[in-house]
Length: 212
Image 1: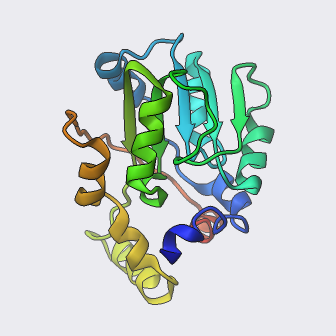
Image 2: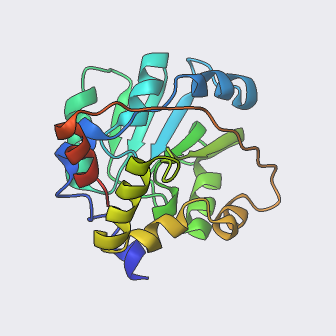
């Protein structure tokens, strides 16, 4: 599938805008993972499709050892520059389907803003291989509102009109078939947290240009 085949390279020219202008993730996520996934500061985390390290940084600040697995060399280099000060940060050239991590070496796998690029069956096999017994996987997205105000609707219209494959990519988000194939018969829980991002004009342009 062409969409998946170019997913590992399509952000190569967007790295600076991605690092500067993509939103972060609510810190409340850590509390949820502590309650539901036994996360502690001693947990070993694999951030799959880690990009420029936005989500990895949250775990590092929590005290976790983090293996940031990213197939794109430019994105990976950006994360290395941003997170090199953390002794527990490990940059890994790998993919969701072939992480190169040792078997049974990880307590928690996280995929932030990345699962829609994975091949679900291959990722599931690999995640089961690297997770320790009783380990957990968490998949999350920042899901932008696209209606309710004139600006949101105009921005969505801009993406629909000029985005190369915007509709196809967005369709893969929260795809129930892919999520069911990934989790199988295992229990899956979902939740949402409010999040927001403030932009000036330059930041808005950068956020737009960071998009796939």
